[in-house]
Image (cartoon, rainbow, N blue to C red):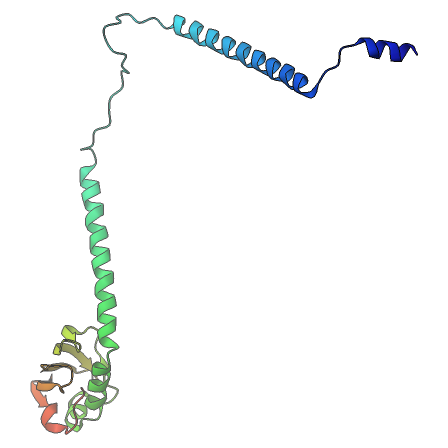
Length: 197
């Protein structure tokens, strides 16, 4: 009975009133926290004393010189450019050496009696890295290439192929297809009825 009487004597607290009390408490806490922060900032600013308030604050430190080590940067850029250019040249040359035109040319050269008489058997590209000089553009119809070959007689020969065509539907017109080795020039166009293109 006593518990009931005490409960009846207390005022009723609604949910909205309880929520308002909680909001007021949180606002008071945030206000007190911000006030303490502002007081600490004001104390720190009071400790900073400028000798001359008219002059701006500066740091006595030397700025980096952009012209230092200029030669190293230029040398690095040149080396990078040379490396990129060499890589691109190797890629383009590899595409030339793997072209069907080069493969067919080597096939007919290996079957040429006059060429085998001078260079011998096992005719391949001369050098560690096969290199095809000149333009080899079958799409535009322009071929003007030169490359070096060697057989088992250790005699180096120079292959030259010059051809062109006006349209894509036409066949290539060969102007020169020859092998020069040991002071002799072999006309492969006259020796073969078929062409490598």
